Each structure stands twice: as C-alpha cells, then as structure tokens.
Length: 358
Image (cartoon, rainbow, N blue to C red; front, side, top):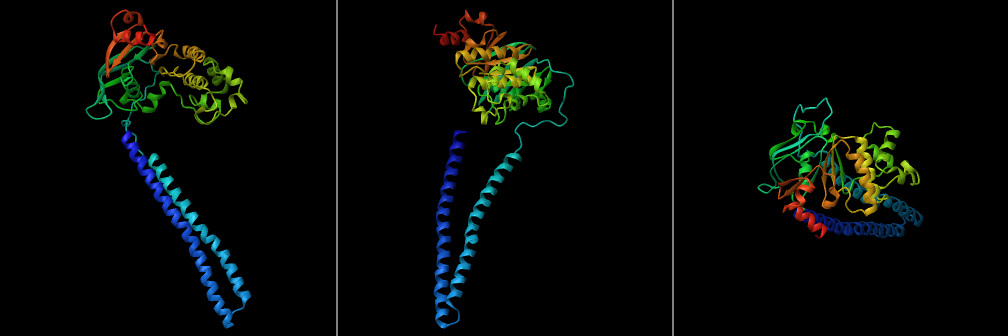
C-alpha cells in the first residue's frame, strides 16, 4: 500500500508539473499572438490610410472594436481549462460511484424476521490480506448473547481484522462466522450492519448539527428519543452549553468539539440505533482521565444487555469483562477472566504487568 501511495503521489506530482509547464507556455503565447495581430493590423491600416483608402478615424475605430473582440477570445482558454478540470473531476467521481464492492451480497440473501440475540461464533476462520500471508489462522471462538468479551493482544495480532470480518468489510478465506446460527455471508449486508454498533477511537462526525449527527443512528427517531439518547450518553449537559444547543453545527469531522465530546455524540448515536451487538474499538483512548470516566459512564448504559466486544491496548480499561481473549499472530492462545489469568504465567499476565510496571 505504501508503494502504491508513493507511486500515485509521484504520478500526481509529475502530472501537476506538466500542467503548470503547459499553462506557463499557453497563457503568454495567447497574449503574444493577440498583441502581434494588433501590430500587424496597425501596420497594414497605416498603409491604407496613406493610400487614402480609409481615414484615421476608421482605423482607430476598427482597432477599438478589435480589442473588444480579443477579450472574449482570450477568456476561451480559461473556459477550456475549467472544462478540462471539471471533466477530470467527474471521471474520478464516477470511478467511485461505479466501483464494485469487494464483498458482494449473494442473490436472495436472507433477511431474518425476528430480532437478533447476538450470539457470535467464529468457526475455524482463516484470512489473509495478501496471498499466503494469513493474519487470522484457523481461529475459533464463541461469544454468548449478552456477554461482554475483551480482545487483547499486541499491535498487528489480528484483533481489528476480526472486527472487519464480522462487519463483512472482508470475507473469510476459510471457515465461517455465524450470528444466531446464521452464516453472515447469507445475510443481507445492510441488515447485518444494522445489528452492529461501532464506537471507535476516532468516531466520524458529519459537517452538520449535533441533532443530525445523533439522528444518523436512527433517522426515524423523534427529538425526544434523540434527547434521551444524549442524556444516557452524558452528552446533554455539554450540548446545552453550545450556542444553539442541538442545532449547533459542529464542523467537518466534529472539529468544533473536543475528543471526549465527539465520543459521547457517537455513543448517543449508537444508543439511538439500539443494536444487539456492540463493538468498542479503543473507545477511551487519547482522552484525559476525567473525560475517560464520563465516557465509561456513558458506555455502561450502552453495554447493558448487549453482546459487547471490547478492544483496548490499556488493559486497565477492561474491568468487568466476562471473558478476556488473548490473540497472538492471528491465533486465540488464551481465554479466561482477569482473575483466572493474572496469577499464572500467561501472555495476558505478562502484558498486564508490563503496562502496570510490576
């Protein structure tokens, strides 16, 4: 990916330089040709005046009209430049619109008529981003409905990949993933993702109002339902302090809000969505202690009665997990509670002690 990015960056740079060189030649050339034409007309017109074929006034009037004619002609190259730019932009837009997703829905995909309980099972799952380099290796695990489990492991161990497979951003190479005994490849993709709420380390917010961002979780909800979700997420207090409260525009990606405020808006959005399965991917990372406590209070409301998957590098944030799963090099190597594993020579105990400096 890095090599592809570098190649595209070089191609873009080379293309931009070529455009600038052509533009640097084109614009002065047009001005020179226009001036040269005026000079030639004046020379030719002077000969006609001397011969008595036209008057000086006629020559001056003709040159004046010619100047008026040159102005729109000179603007044509600017119009051409704008058209070429618009054409290139439209090609890139339609390239995205016409792009086919890597993960495709099967014909007659299944749409359950009952609400999901949230029982998840990975059955001998293997997956590789590049051929012959699997990042998940024959992994099996079961998550009971309503349980709160934590995925633990070093960076690159495969934790986030498991979440991407569950959301069907990618499909497994071997094995299968089921929810309530339904193979997720047989479910409608839109339905599958409606059943899962995700609160990430850097939640995406839109350039709209606070209310619009919360209602994105459930566009059919009314203002009262939206407000209840904000209260449960401990967002209502700071929202009421904004200039226009819930009608305050928060900027692209929520730039007008702090990190903790963005997280609480994302939690309110997920509460309004009310999914049976919840994924918290580093939801309290990069915030101060006071903000972390407020987010934890909001998350306690969010996790109630839901199947919850926690991913965190700070193991101290995993308190209360029903089960901790340790992932290493794409394999599940340990499973148990904090108390069961902390007093033994386990991978989890080593990770915990290294973070606690014990």
